[in-house]
Length: 420
Image (cartoon, rainbow, N blue to C red; front, top):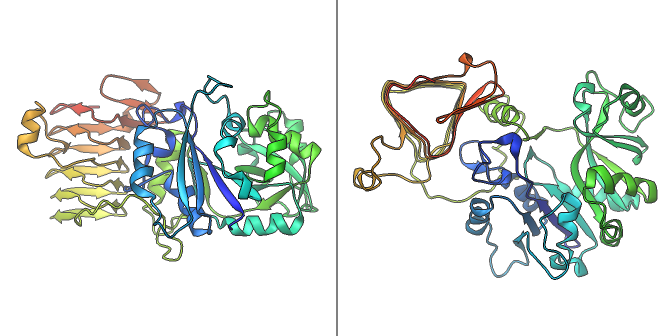
């Protein structure tokens, strides 16, 4: 893999994940109690033998940069790096990134292209496991100029994705988010395709994973009016060059909405979860916190994830994800919820200095169902949070409702006895 460098796109404003993205970039959003979304593509790269990785960032970058800086440090005997390339003003450009292609174009000068035969472009906010070496091997074997990772999807999901049609491995047609029935009919897989349709999955969708030969990437980015890979660069490359499809049939989730994020996390609590964090040969890496094991006393826990450093007393936890350092008081029940945990433990003296009436964490005798509690919240005693009370999205001072889920934003204080 020495001839390939990886570029991970840090994403835009992440408005569909608000309020999780109010103070952080999408790739920095916590996942599965102890990870962050960015850990997925970086771990896939490391496990695939790719050690030269650049991350392009722009919005709410502080926590993302801190996570990368404190997590991914290769030793001095390893020719590898995870390099942060933040949006910058130059003599040629003073603007923000205008799209995915524009972000890569503006960083070509910083990428180690002189020693790279190929550039692998990845998204920073997807949940999947892939050995990129297999994609690269097919790309070289077929002599392609570019290769897209693709997966089969149902027709009802096709209008929100880049949909393509193949002849053998080669992509012959591509439409970004097709909206008409005629387009969907034209792009539907047939029995003569490289991979015929399977029950319920009738279209091939781009995963937003692109492998380019380096000189081809330079060429397709030369037109500065083209700003986005899916809408502009890929369709043009298919017309002008040899662009192949790499078929992937594993678990893949684009964490683009609150509902997708909530469902993907809660699925991880199931014994038959489609994404496996327990693969010793291809671990998912994250920041080593050196936390103590969690301590639980007189608790009832079913089908849940409990991360490190938690203290939980006489509580009931059902089908939920409990993040690092979470403190839960006696008599509390948490059901079908995500609690992202805490960034720090807080002594009584520190709480007095902060003039916080309510301790950090979740108090006693609370009832929390269908909720998502962001980091460092202070939930008082006797608080009720019940998502079934809300049929529509809404915003309030203490909480936000999106996709039928109640979200308590980061560092929010919810007073004793509050009913949400």
